[in-house]
Picture 1 (spheres, rainbow, N blue to C red):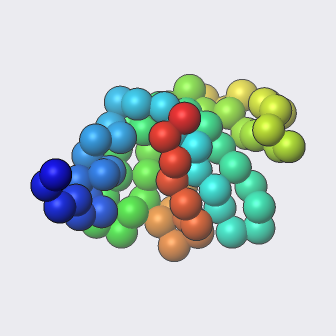
Picture 2: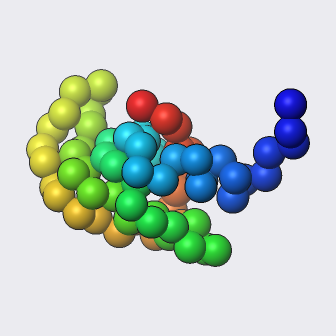
Length: 74
């Protein structure tokens, strides 16, 4: 198996659904549309998640990289 770098994982997540956890406990699920070297991430069709349930739809959102704790495939 080839060694994976963080950007390889992010590249493989493009156009796929991911769950992103932020500092403060907020979670968002959506289609990862773009990212940059600072790990700022654009989600499309984003929705806020609380207690494992969708709380509200948001649409397109930009998440600042320094507030992201984790990114997980959904």
